[in-house]
Length: 188
Ligand SMILES: [Cu+2]
Image (cartoon, rainbow, N blue to C red; front, side, top):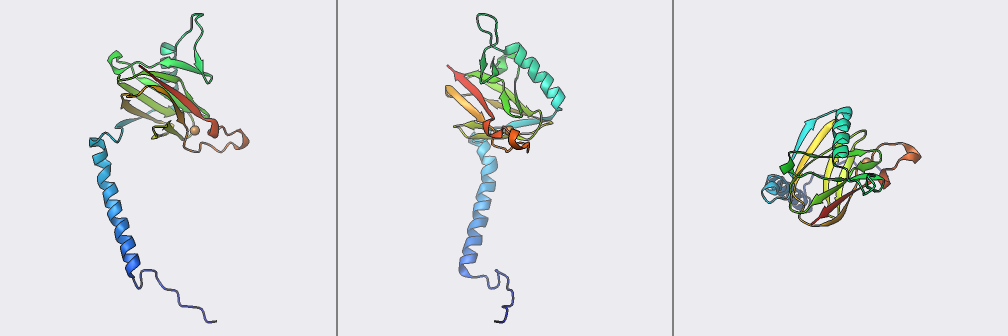
């Protein structure tokens, strides 16, 4: 059987292909317009980004945890999932909140008050991690060397979980990516 001469898919450019390409282009334009509009409708969290180092971020965040960690009556630090539980300071205190992502945990466990506004920093001390707040499905990339700051005001109470949605590191059987879960509590 003689081989067929190779042809290009756009030659001839038939009706179905034209329709498909047109729809894809229109959808692309809609998505592009939605990006800035999302900010107007509060669908996007505005974030600031700064350069940092793993060492510098760790120091600042550890100092924050030490200052705001919750102690029980015996003076022992309260823990959740092995992490310190911290009363997050809202912006009126002049202090910011710091969250550490590292292999393979988010710390500390943060306690917010509904209706108050917070500046939350996040950075990684090792690999690229993903911050995914569930079930709200609020997602951010967390990279070492970058300090991401989001300003947010929780509007519902409850216990929420942060899961890492970025497959982090390739440490073989020791990889704890699938159990990398953090905790956020919002109180009345
Ligand atoms: Cu991770």
